[in-house]
Image (cartoon, helix red, strand yellow):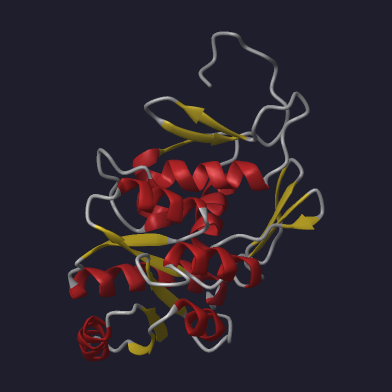
Length: 238
């Protein structure tokens, strides 16, 4: 696998690069946002790791521009304890985040987890059929999802979450089950990653005929993908 590290800290890049190399992960570097954007959109990398705090074009600006051109998996390096940075990064389409200063072993584990989700499209035994959930069509073999005939532009994480919800359409999927399957980790008590990704998916999916979002929150339990319009129930959770 080949990844791009975008960080103005040259010494840190070399340190992380040496460790990742020992883990079988080839890393190349860019030390500013402008060169980082060009390399990230070149098609030469499997994943990019972006530092938020860079002079000029910072990591958030870079992520925003990458998402306009590419679905390349992205992990953000965020200042430790800066929850706002993590949430904004996820809202802009990041697949995961690692607090900085980061443990190289944790970064390697996160890289592998994100790439496993992205590589599901290379499954040698994909499900050949098209799965329908109302207006939504999931094509597992081509790793694509269509809504009302339009292909959705999804990050690898969004795809993994939506695929599991489609597979269990009409059923409640628990937070922990969704986190383990789609994110490859146990959900911590203060981890809002899934909430942010679900919010992003709601914006991309068409709404139900009554204007309600297609993904329904079942408080304290998880989420439910509604394939077709359900009769109104005033006592039902929202």
